[in-house]
Amino acid sequence: MSMFAICAKYALGQVVRHRDRPFRGVVFDVDPRFANSEDWYQAIPESSRPRKDQPFYHLLVERDEDFCIAYVSEQNLVADSSGGPVNHPDLPDLFGPFTDGHYPLQVQLN
Image 1 (spheres, one colour):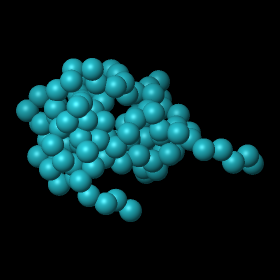
Image 2 (image 1 turned 90 degrees about the vertical axis):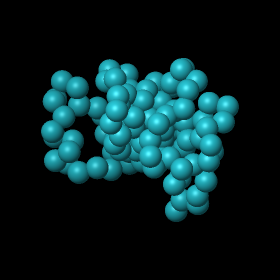
Image 3 (image 1 turned 45 degrees about the vertical axis):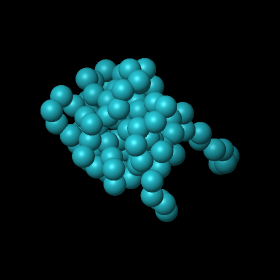
Image 4 (image 1 turned 30 degrees about the horizontal axis):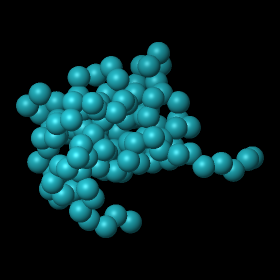
């Protein structure tokens, strides 16, 4: 078995948009490979199920008037080009004020 590093395309504090779904969010954690439950994975329709051997991102998401946390594969994300901040009530717990298109990390993560 070969050892190789998987590099994440998106950084902590970066604003991203889902490729197919109408939401955007802020990256607050990255798994180098799929690290959620098998039940969660199997619940995704097989025709749109992402590969497990890619980074998966934990996002603070704004969706219309709703807020949530999402777990999204890198293949389903694109950088957000709107230049605007994300409105999520948990952002101040992790990040500083929106500056130059991203949120600076405010807390030390393990």
